[in-house]
Amino acid sequence: MTTTGGPEPIFKVIRWPSVPEILEDSEFLTAFGSCLHYVVLGTTKGALLLLDVDGNLIFRYEQKAVITSILVHGWIIYFGDADGNIVSLDWFKGVKEIYQASPDAITFISMSENGLIYFTTADKVFQRRSV
Image (cartoon, rainbow, N blue to C red; front, side, top):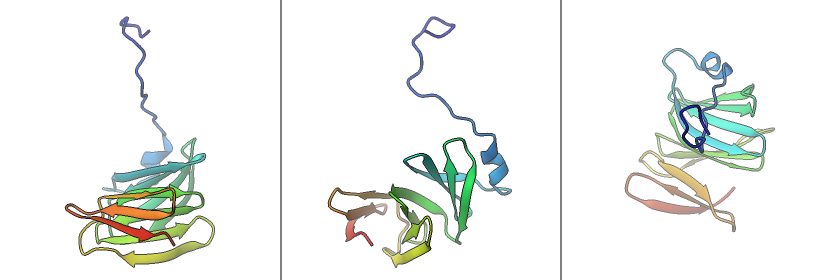
């Protein structure tokens, strides 16, 4: 119970003091993904931030386009951007592939159990084998 007598909230806000310090001036969060003990954030300035569960920055990858969606699959991070690209990035080796998926911004990305990547734009759904 809370102090007001109501039930405990199902979700709680996590406030990592390090996140505002990691972001540059006029940079905002646009996408989120997680796996194991890590969190991946995308930003308006095209940065992909890998943080541990305590909010410590592990690495920052930068590109030009706004990151719009993130999928984390093991050590591989797939992300879509506002320019219609899907990028696969290995945590240890760097970028594996940049795939021009659409002329429109990627709005969502997901992976099926058989390794197919599904992604959407504002009005279409696509499928592609993972890399």
